[in-house]
Amino acid sequence: MTQIASEVIINTVLLLLMVAVVIGIVRLRNLFAVVMLGGIYSFLMATLLVVLDAVDVAMTEAAVGAGISTVLMLSVLGLTQTREAVPAHRPIVPLIVAVLVGAALVHGTGTLPDFGDPNAPSQLHVAPDYIERAPRETGAPNIVTAVLASYRGYDTLGETTVIFTGGIGVLVLLAGGRRRRAAGSGGEDSGVSST
Amino acid sequence: MMMRDTVILRVAVKLLLPVILMFALYVQFHGDYGPGGGFQAGVAVATAIILYGLIFGLRAARQVAPPGVVLAMIPLGVVIFAGTGIASLLLGANYLDYSPFAHDPAHGQHYGILIVEIGVLVTVSSTMLAIFYAFAGRNRELADDETDGADEEV
Image (cartoon, rainbow over all chains, first blue to last red):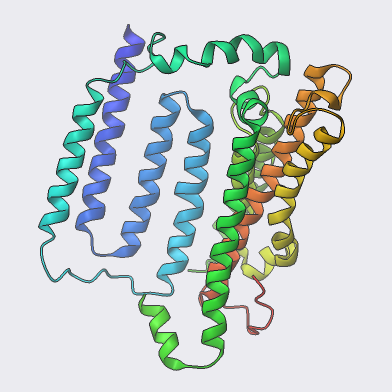
């Protein structure tokens, strides 16, 4: 019981910190600080995922969200301005949409089963089958790995192909931009740095 | 943005790099037993080389992981993964069924999982690195030691 209570406290603190970071991101105009706060947000998210026992997702979040994407954002800031322009109008409609979607999501969580509930539908569908078969058929004590790499090997192959396609797409886009710039139009150069 | 003159950063990064790479290998090959796998190990490897590039310069990072090799590794990982499936087809099983890779089906599954996780590691790490090279190569401050734009393959 005390463990559950301490988990609630840890989760609450982490989520409140994340809210504070998001408010900072919305209010700040200095994009360098915004990128840094984005990295902090990712680290808080990673910590929350550790509390939720999703350590592999936490590792990915820390490495990609806080590490690599922060570095990529910083190198983009080297190409653009580091101050965000003040918007010409107050964005009321996006605020209303965000509040409505948020309210719908909060309303929807009321009907979800409790976190970790062994009788939740998702725990009763194929999970018992995997838990029963995976140690015998694959010998892998980590059932997540057995499911990802063996039972759901098609899905993981698809994910790897998605990463491949995404990477090639980004490289082609960046290479195309450089070739146009190398062709020697100054207007193109300023267009690249302002976008 | 370049901090190559900062002694503390250089020494700290040199101390951190082997730890990061060892952790990546641990996550890769211990994925059967603990959390992690090819994707997590791949981003950890990429993070290590990106960190090296940030502190010691893009040119040094390109010597450690040459852009040509990185580019070739992007499809290589997918080929390893898909080729494992074709290997199991040739051995008479279903696509991506690793059971015929060893006499004991459970051992075959073990080998198959290890091989496809290596495929994931290769594609993920090289994709992250290639995107970093592509962004950093366009950044004058990051690529300040790159006087010639001709070799910016990535």
